Picture 1 (cartoon, protein in one colour):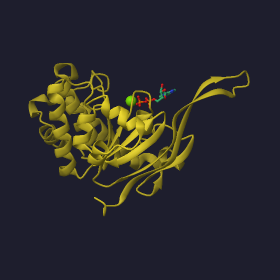
Picture 2 (cartoon, rainbow, N blue to C red):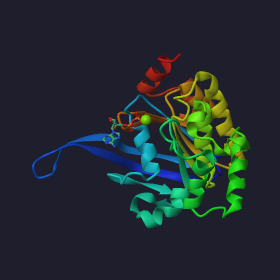
Picture 3 (tube, rainbow, N blue to C red):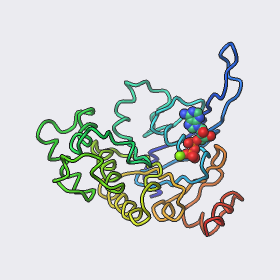
Picture 4 (cartoon, protein in one colour):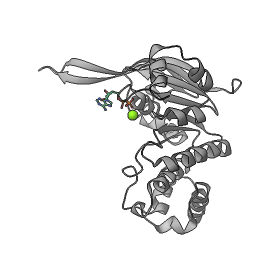
Length: 262
Ligand code: ADP
Ligand code: MG
């Protein structure tokens, strides 16, 4: 891992939100959701991000997806400063960087069938013309543990775990390099959480993926991550190899976080 290149370089990233404005439209109060965060993710690595609710994990994820402009700092992806790019410049990165969110119920358009859901990103990015596309979707479905017969079914006909499998297939349909997984198993039954994590690991080696894995379930994040960062109040208070973090936590908040689950 240490020899692979740095794919994601988060450099003193800040994302502040306005909490109120005065009569001239100036901010009267700001919420520092992310306040000077730096870390790197190497190609092929899984970087776990943990911390209590509201600590800024999802905001970091959305910044990496460049769903926001940054207040300050920069995210370099494969050497390119995402914060400086306009929509045109971002287009290739909107394919190379994909995401999976917590809630597979609300993230899938209920009026599209599985074939349409998974082929939509392919169409947007001009991958697999015509008949090839349907075959590519069917193959992908099998890779995420679903069946060809499911192509013409709709999201409401699937369980939560199956819907998350559909969102994963959708994310992988455009052959990304990097996937932001924002609590991808938190909404699932405990019995299917491990299945989905194992599948994400299998897909990682098959497709050579790099992951940011956001979680509050610490046991799963330890299992899947090479390194883990701990967020607290918009800051990254500790970064360490997974086992090292668990066996020898340094920051008081990390200690508290670990002791509250053991
Ligand atoms: P986490 O994912 O760790 O629970 P978030 O990144 O979602 O934390 O949120 C961090 C803080 O930023 C929270 O106080 C949240 O309310 C606030 N926040 C997140 N997104 C927005 C937004 N789009 N506008 C305003 N405040 C936001
Ligand atoms: Mg979140």
